[in-house]
Length: 94
Image 1 (cartoon, rainbow, N blue to C red):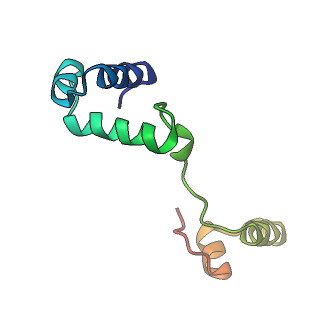
Image 2 (image 1 turned 90 degrees about the vertical axis):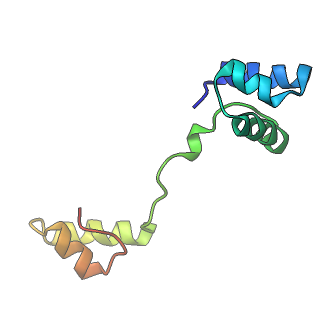
């Protein structure tokens, strides 16, 4: 993954030359990376990495979180497997 400064330089080179093959060779990336950065900039208006989108998405709803807390308060010695089975949660027991 290219850091933001390298992304900026790749796009500046593209703006000057429009030669993806040379740019890819110079920065030691694939031509597809150059084109992806160009498309991303056109789509989002930015070249910066979007690390905030990498987080895992939650599977459980707020109600399910609340139900888990209630169940644990009622039965402090309950296991993860029992919680998943009792509440029919769409998750593994790990």
